[in-house]
Image (cartoon, rainbow, N blue to C red; front, side):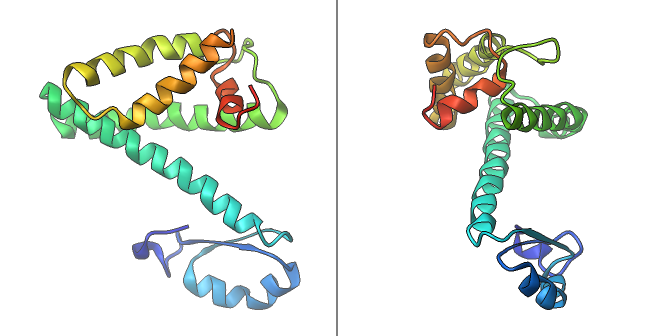
Length: 174
């Protein structure tokens, strides 16, 4: 779970799945490769599944950043300003990611008093981003997939559900 510059550092993450005994016996080797060594369970497939899930999270953030850069460049906004303002959003985004995971873990997909915003509210704001990107002829490849999820949820009558309910549309359960 690291780019090459993190290998061998305290921040380098190694996910190990399989025998806990084998993990403990080889932990010094893993620690030489990265300081954040995690035994994720006995099932040998868990590390690969978590790697894929975490890469999806990472690429979502990276492609979102590419969209943000493109919008700023098309609108004449200094990227330094984007970088500064991004830092103010980190706690908000972190909180929403944690909330999405917890809501899906517990099955709390309907909107409630702790919801940040409904699917319909998110989609309304998203349509503004989509319109700006269309008007400025910014590549829509990433956002069209996201718009498709929104539209499927809205068509299914789930617009007032919490944003977390979109997860059901990702795995075809909705």
